[in-house]
Amino acid sequence: MRCSADRLVEALIAIQMLDYQKHQSSKGTRSTKPAVVTISRECGSMGAQVAQLLADALEVRCCDRIILQEVARRANVDENLVKALDQHVSELEDHWWKKLLHKEALSYEDYYQNLVKTVLSISRTGGVIVGRGANHILGEKRAFRVRVTGSLDKCAEFISERDKVDMKLAMEKARRSNKERAEYIHKLYNADINDPSHYDLVLNSDRFSREQIVDLILLAMDKAGFTIPNDARQSLSALAE
Image 1 (cartoon, one colour):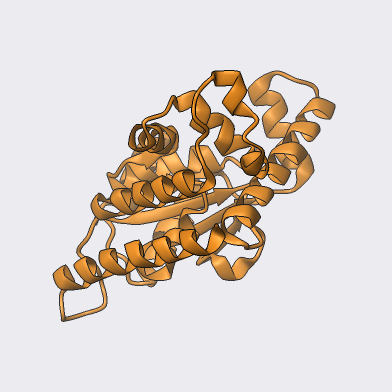
Image 2 (tube, rainbow, N blue to C red):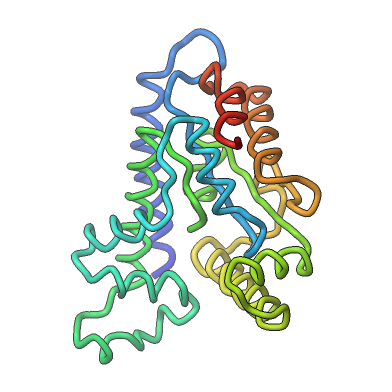
């Protein structure tokens, strides 16, 4: 089952890479395509807020829930089914939602195939893609891959303030969410979500504000040869005010 899905991913990416190379300038190392950034984040590390602020600075879409909507549309199933599957990917093979919804189960292959197609489609026009292991789908040649982390205490403080819950509940939520995200990446890509080799930049939100994190991402993208809007860092300052 996994083998066929892997071959599908390789074929889809190969097709997209041929199209990318066809339109790539033969001179220089910078791409003229809109920026594509993947954001992997720990719960409470401000990763979602960073993603939106970065998208605004780069003048591209921030893609989070829209990924679920597009996967559901492509698979012709209810978005709530995809959302449940997205949050509990470790239970993919159990099909526990089939009886609950009285519908055909969304198989592992269908979910994986439509997720890959959705992420590749977004990459054509640029965007900041949140989660879903998009860094594994796109790789280093098609996206700038970022991970935002933070200590459990600091992340729990953020969750506690955001969700208006006590620190104990906030810590439980952070642990549970991080565990589910790690299982998701292991299940779909057989990878460790905390392996730094899967990212171009890893930033600790304990030390930096969200604006500083975005500024560091923009600076690193520029140094890595990615094309960003000339006034991206200046517009970030305006957005932060």
